[in-house]
Amino acid sequence: MRFTKTNCNFIKLVFFVGFFISINSAKAQFNKNLDTIKLTAIIYNGDTISCTTISNIYIQCKLTFAQREALAKYNRLRNAVYVTYPYARKSGVILNELNKQLSVLTDKRSRKKCIKSKEKELKKEFTTPLTNLSIYQGKVLMKLINRETGNSCYEIIKEYQGGLAAGVYQTVAFFFNSSLKQAYEPKDEDIVIEKIVQEVQRMYGYPEIALNPSL
Image (cartoon, rainbow, N blue to C red):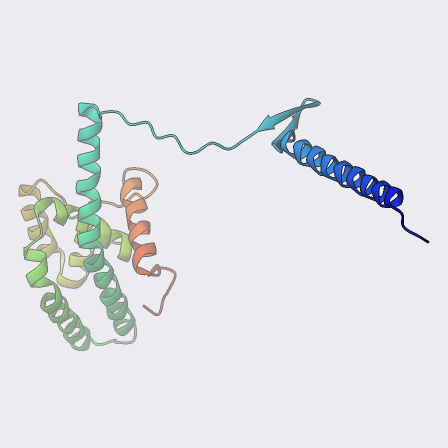
């Protein structure tokens, strides 16, 4: 085919028109994408409703006097549990060991010797730290010992040292506005203590003594 000037001009025209059409088509597609906004939606009662998740909104206000008092009371209890639970737990472990040993001892002399040995172990481990506890922490400790052993401090003393010694210790505790006979009620009066104990167990990986007879 022989290209003349007229043919060349025609080809240029066709090329220009094609290029112009492709540009407009791309531009139209681009504008179409800009006109479309994708949203998350839910269908509620047959209606499609757009929805979105907004950032957290924090609302703060000043605590009332009663709220500040309640918070201080809780923090005091929480601190006391954190301080005394390791001692109560260790006491439970030692008393479990003692009961195992006593279960195979029959004569009175051997049993008394075994009890004295464990008593020395307890005194050696706890005398210094326990003397640094406050009266309030001491009350919490007695409740936790009950939790870990299933017996009140009065019952433990009576079992291993006799009723007279238990009576003397109970009289001393009375003067400090406390009682060696106080129970532990995890689902009632002591529910907050129980929740804090579980928090301590999760934090430090303590298994329940009652669920681990080997402890």
